[in-house]
Length: 208
Image (cartoon, rainbow, N blue to C red; front, top):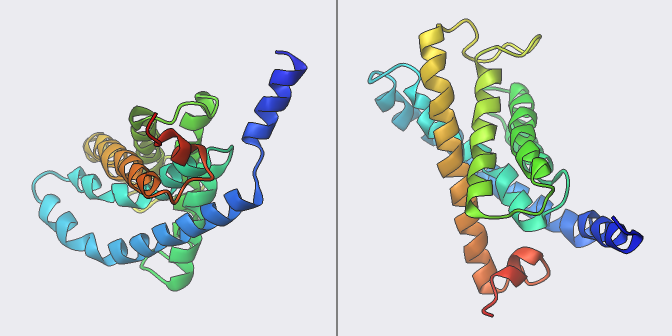
């Protein structure tokens, strides 16, 4: 890699003030969705649970959307983790049934999405990379929820292997659709309005 290429890459990955501001705004907006879903999810979850224990994970993907959403717009290292963690902190501060463990969940979920974009060198911002980020958020969330992280007992710690075998793929699917793909659709819609003109996500949506 030449010095010119290295310099160009460094500039591309460096956070600007506008990146921080917009990432924060998007994270706050996602936190409002979290706050609503903290209660609204109960009905769908209660309908699914009797069908097959663990399949209620299909409704959880909305809690993973902040990471892919912020990352797809900002496109900088740490964006997915920042978005999910800030949204989780706000949800916890407002108050919910999970308390401070919401922050741990946000950290774990954001890390899942961040890993996908990091592996892709923060260069691939397609529907499938967004779906993959949402799916890995779901996998990481499941590992935490099932109490598989040492010292971090999740809400389903001690559940049977059969429950986990249903719950983990259910959350991965939900994350891919309700977090990754939905975030991609939202970003495309925002870009079409011109609201993201200062970001690569907005410039990529311009007619050629």
